[in-house]
Picture (cartoon, rainbow, N blue to C red):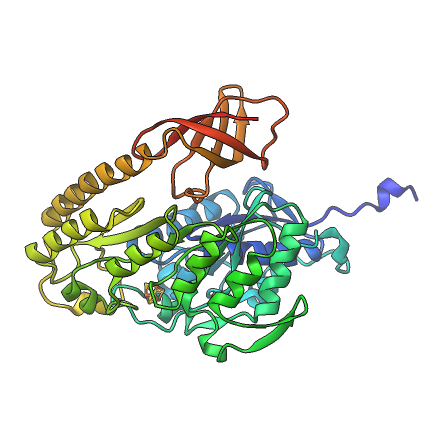
Length: 444
Ligand code: SF4
């Protein structure tokens, strides 16, 4: 028998990954396990033996997108397994797509694998060396998301994530650091730390201590930032709430150990609305804290998101928010109009805001913030920044500075420079700016 006739075609799985970076990390974990078992991935639904759809259920528009993606996979393939946040509500999926093969909730890796095995059995024994040490990444090779915990202990009234994903479960510090080190060794230049509440990391395990690189480290926000800062690559923190203990990490930023960047989802500024939202750290004096942080680390970039039109938000609450924005001078801001998500406690709050008022507040909010963001970016003109290159084509190079997270923030556009590759960090002099992006010339 010839070698060719012995060849077995590996089973092919199509993967659709929707939703936030946390869902992306789940997809990466599932794909890493499947690859280890000999499965390969199909770029099209038609060519796949089965399609796996990792869904998002955060807001109604995300649910609709998920249901449409399942419908597309059913139409183009017919063998579909659904996982992720929307999978926590199987009846919603079955209502629209009664013939999906299996539905599992978020983080049910074993159940997803079992469903794939049943639909398309693996053809040979696992051989782990097929999988790169750092696992498979859906993001470009030079940056990667690192999930440090699952779930959340908070109970924000507009959010159903704790209902879908349960309470906080932190990964032990040495597990997080092992993954971070493997990513760095594999050539990753930027790690983005994600969770639902990064500053609460380790609370659930009482900050359990483990040795790492000859030193005892706690499963705790500061210890993690310190250890990550020793890797010599960019470390960017997302979903950090402004608790007092965050101050310590700002010193690490000032010392250049981790990127001077904080993504703090503040959602509102008016004490009445924050209370109705039951936001973590709502009682903290956030403006004072931000001022203190900027004193410690003047180049700190702060990104945040806000919700306008929350039930009970009065004209005064909204004006308070606009004035707060003026004072806070945040660098990057996203805004959502409140959505009445099914099963969220906020549905039952009184005084819902009419849609036209929400729209009007949204527009006023964005107008205000765009002026602030544009002014803050203007301050960068004339400065020299390190820029991590994401893309190169004939028109130029697109990259990001420490102040820009991938996908959600702006870019730095540069001239094409000989010898520079995607994933390189170059020095660039900033020559122009608008309200989102910067333009510069390389200095190498
Ligand atoms: S902090 Fe609030 S908004 Fe964020 S996941 Fe937890 S409950 Fe939801």
